[in-house]
Image 1: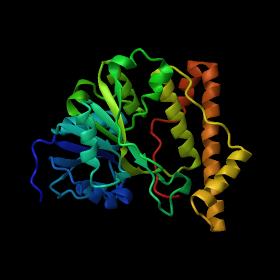
Image 2: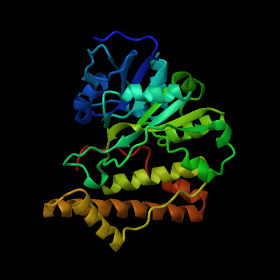
Image 3: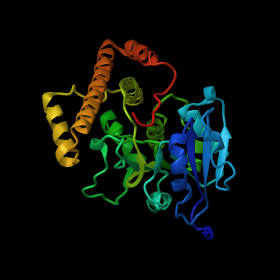
Length: 327
């Protein structure tokens, strides 16, 4: 075991879990194998798993598991609980279906935060080249900047809601926080979008955040009709609630979209098997269609007024859309 360098801040990787064995059984090695010189540990907050997730590495010295009832889970309040349970300098939030892209993930995230004197930094996400994952989403970097884009609170408060929305593409799939910042401003207890709202509220308080997209985790959601619809409507609703604007809406898939999808599958991604081409073409067409239909639903509610928007949102139920592994 390498000696700990006390000059590096301590980090807790916090992961809310629920029946996550399909992902964590392999990804936990990537979290534990980080080449970080400072002290770090992994905190799993499990909300009533029945697949053995709560048993995962429970005896490992770097892994701590805290159990809560399933009904107690909330995107905001469960992450606030992680902050209370951790005593590290920094909290690095991710999710059960993500994994580090390389062993330098923690180190690079910490460097991005400390070298730019930020209160929080959001990393990037990428989709791995795997046979059961949509080829159109595979990560194919052309050029990747190592720069960190800072957003200053003193500037943010003077921007239009549209510009503010563009600068709050924050995501707890990969986000590092100074723990004291989260103690000062906890996440809101909301079903969705707790990360985006925190970023906006922190900037309004005069804090500074940044984006370091080269610090990536592997992450992917398999889309099916109802999942796509609910996720899109949740996203649109919380952008509206947070910034008071009609978010950008996705158009219906067209013939041009279908032809471009076919070209990208064959030419860009080298998919030549006719059955695979057809299956992935259908997948992408259905995904675009369900996303567009959700946008149409939201636009109709938006044009009718806030009461209709709230009614649409509450019709989705009280659970966040859950990702599944594979088709």
